[in-house]
Image 1 (cartoon, rainbow, N blue to C red):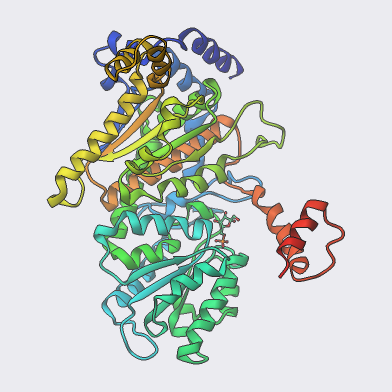
Image 2: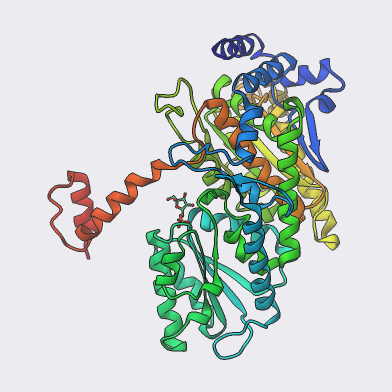
Length: 536
Ligand code: F6P
């Protein structure tokens, strides 16, 4: 393995200055040879510096890390989350009903299907008004209270699938900041609002606090017993019962579903309520199709594997410390935020599986915003900044708004223009000509040429799909899940724990009494000073 890392670095050193345009000039088939499709979803990675040698070495890296058998271990229920002693089976949540996937010798698929069926019955009854409010009305609004993996997926998905949204309006409260729940509830009627309390552990302080606030809000109108307006999603059924949520509206899942991988099951309840069980199933089917591909396609034609290897190439071999996800799809506006948890909580680690320090960088910083908005904000840095940020564009062939097809054409033109501009750049000579045309001459034209030139050669990939349907959306999210897994395997880390979130939580618990006036003298001077400044 270490030899392959060295070979990759040596290869990069000899090819670093080759312009991307040369790779296209030398190979008329570069687009075909550096793109891969699953169904109608295409990954074009021809605008990266990968050549046949780099790609072959990266595949060797994946082989050396035993990626294929690790994929099998993931999907067959082995306890690969070694620090928590758990299997990692989000893929089972979307597997076909007749699949057999065992954890500790027990097939988990029937219980998944059972909960899915219960979710379907409840969502349908809520959507058609059969399940009515305490006062016998139809529910008009659903508020999901959760945070992290119990929020980001459903928020992203309900936005992504807005054209399919024909159920009650869905709202989301996550932040412990009272402003969040205040502003969401302010526009709602308690009499026709269902509160879904979503927490894998049912201990998360933000969610438990917001849940209590919501219950008090319901009680203000409905009286003491508001249980008809409550549902819960959790692995901790004892705790949901203690909160007074009737079992009929509690949707459980197992601890082998990680929080950030959980929207395919009961955490996806708001999605199902919004779009209905059929569209939800199509979303699961899209992800399941990507699972099949990930498990069965050869590494060199495997879309998530290639996306992962491109990530490794950019991060470890080229030294690019962040990547930008740029959906040219307004309905994917929360994809970057979702990926921040998926990617950075999974692969933001510094130690290998055996607890020893990693020999090289792991997860990059992931960030982004939808195009074209980002173009008018941070793209300046992408094009002319001193750091190179590999970019990932997402774009559909058609939008849902047939009467606005001309706007979608503009969107496509902008998306393609950006990856082209990042690749081509603009030479100093071209820039000087432009400066002259703008009326500059002599040293002024020289000076302006510096400002008007673009280095180019900045890598990007593009994920193109026919239309953002539930199926395609499922494919896209599963693609990113498996990309994160691929990278985690190459780096030799556990992508499924998140110990790094613990310390801040512990300290917050200890700080709360000090915020409320208790003695803060054990704290450092900065914290003491800030406590004093923030005291009310
Ligand atoms: O603090 C991080 C985290 O544990 C995430 O991994 C998780 O998605 C989130 O908190 C919410 O946890 P829960 O669903 O248990 O409330």
